[in-house]
Image 1 (cartoon, rainbow, N blue to C red):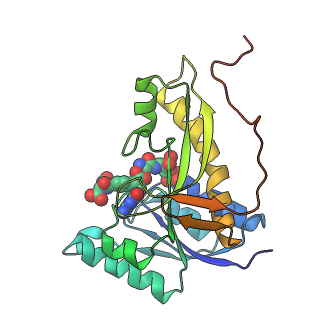
Image 2 (image 1 turned 135 degrees about the vertical axis):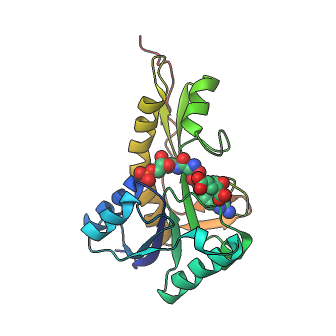
Length: 220
Ligand code: NHR
Ligand code: GAR
């Protein structure tokens, strides 16, 4: 068992990634303690998920603050007050200003439903489909001051099929999000992530040269 890492999870919506983190903790696959879940929206369903599992919640509406910086400082103050070490963005839809990023430098993670640096920003799955890529996926990265640009921790690749809809592809990607986000947090808890410039090195994992995805596959 690694030491338990104290995390704060920031959401704006449904919170299925939050659910995957709660489930991994309950299954003892993730040595983390969620200090609280914070939403900028009072009606985010993720808040119900948190309450269902005895996790405390906070709602901080960005519209009640005079500036992005003032909002971010209030969030940082809450995170500090609860002893949060690692901030986990799970569908949080507010861009973080430098005030926030500096306070938690290389201690904020985000998950994005694309193989970054391809398709940053909104509607990544739709963009991937329209572009015609054969492989899509998801990325967990540390957050820096740019959007979807921070050092990459882990990625999962999924096939794109000729008859895919945006919904089908998004669901295929989301399933893998739920596997890699708890894993990324566990690697952090185990102290196995080191950020060197743009690159994140992961201690002690074995290589497999044959772990590839070919799409369309070599079989017919
Ligand atoms: N903050 C920084 N500094 N860097 C990143 O990589 C971030 C980030 C904050 C959030 C998540 C990202 C996503 O999952 C994320 C990554 C919202 C926006 C945005 O522009 C951008 C990226 C992400 C989430 N939001 C608008 C804003 O004015 C509001 C949009 C809305 O409310 O619907 O902040 O996609
Ligand atoms: C996830 O697919 C996440 O990757 C994506 O929103 C969904 C949140 O789902 N994030 C973005 O598109 C960021 N631009 P959840 O609320 O059920 O975890």
